[in-house]
Length: 539
Image (tube, rainbow, N blue to C red; front, side, top):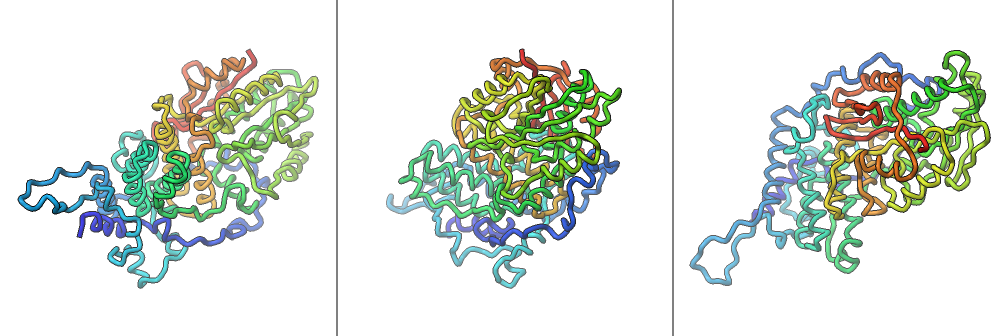
């Protein structure tokens, strides 16, 4: 038996249920614990809660157990064998026609039909179930193998355990180079390890495998792609914009409660808008929402406006929500039937604030009114857009002459990739890893409908509509904003302190680092950049 078969036997025993072994259950209309949920009854509880999420015990979730360590060692061994070059043939006196036993590094022995081979050893979960098919309950019972985010060791400290990237990045490079035999082999190994319900590595492998399958035809051509057998890895979770509205709303609020991924930039934006309103004579406020909050951000802003000292609350507030573009970024679109307007209007009335909400299909239909203070919140919407769309969007925003522009985007850390599709894939993979690992910490390793919905949407970032649209750092955005006619402004001390206070309620792996000049504020996970929030005014 070749080494390839024995290593695949190892793979079958060391991973959660692979993508092509998972069932496809229909998503329930709403989680049972969401009964009677009204997201505006306690609008800012997640900002004022005393409990520190990071103070909870994570001992039960730790992967520092003999079984988990053994599993990690097994996977590391397989990854090392997969990526190592084939050993040179040993001297032999046999006939030149005699073939040496192939190694796992030989793509030629990676038969796509082997996943269904009768020689493949069953996984422990399969054996425990008596050989019957897997169920969604089996997936929920599988424990997470991870560690508390507060280690602060940075990306390098756990790089050796991040085996999914060690397989996905060479596979992306092989696809771009047209090396189909190597790509086929790596895709097969990834298919054996990928799972949407395992730990962060297994989930990253699943999302990366799905993205590679989508990129394959464009990279090598339809005919060549048809010769590659990609393991099936369809995500069992419905699309973010096709979720049941009640679950969609509950997922957004839960994510704000347990993770600062969007909550911190939203808090900074709200604090900056309130500070700008307090610094001027009271006048109508017009907020243009080009973001991904889907209404969750605004109750806190409205409440803070009513608390401005000296009666400086604006006499009225107009909120214009601009629809997602054709190349919509992750989290930008909402499902049919989801409408936060009635809830937000009811809340505004309860705090005696005059509010009007309008929706615009695009920036072309947005208009200003004389005497209004216009503020634009452009958050997480341009990161996946092509260069032309980015420039056009900023040109239109500048044409509206806003008094303040809040820009938040994912931060690739200023690293410059080589300009290839494989380099872009690696940059986005790094950001997705931070999302999946931090989400594991946020949900304390527990699986659930909300978490699966959020992670499935984050995974769509791997399939950028424009493969040349780079995942950039804030320096690149600073240059782009200056070219569009904006100059950077600084957050006030009160805004920064509000954000810092908010961050204390989340896992200890999170930190924020305002620029020395008080300008952009960076959000980091384990010392590595995740996003930034910045303020701009017309130059």
